Image (cartoon, rainbow, N blue to C red; front, side):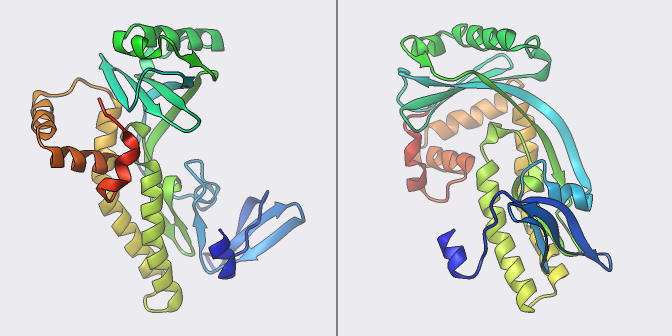
Length: 284
């Protein structure tokens, strides 16, 4: 943020967008309110980078192009003292359990399951379902035998959907335009990739080297080309269906080739270089 401020950007904290300024059918800024009261902010382009519940997307009525719904639900908690040095992923039926090391010497342990297997309403039933599902898997139970759950289990569910991402004077980036189940771990990588492509498009459109609408359409086409295959793959994996024999054969061949393993992991987590994936530790 200091670099952006040095180039003239202004950060408004505790500011809520309440409406859009529209001139001759074109978005020309936002209306909002902050600590200093209501204000109108004028702009040639309004960028909605405000998450899957995007206010900008709602206000411009961005069309939903594809909606696959919620394909999986999850419960996750933070544990201290796990007997696991790296990442562990275990599948049992249509349930998946993921152990990921994180900061503060903690491990986040996620339980993913089909929506129809959701526990009864209420925190007690939810917590019991989480703990019993982990204990049912011997290798997970062993990894957590001497560990302590240091947070209340939390629930999550993500709708798999993508929107049309640009129009007269507005554009969407990141989850505001395209969000999918976290099973493929691509959310933040998608957001960074969107930012890079959109920055180039805005530079071209605002500098006059391209028409602004043409530049935003180019951004939309580029991000779709980058995302659609991953969107379909993520939706397929989120259903937690048994792996096909063909997939398992491909995985076996990949596992026998160190460079193929490296490429597979880097692609999965959105890394550009082998060194970027060093934090993963040992994968299982």
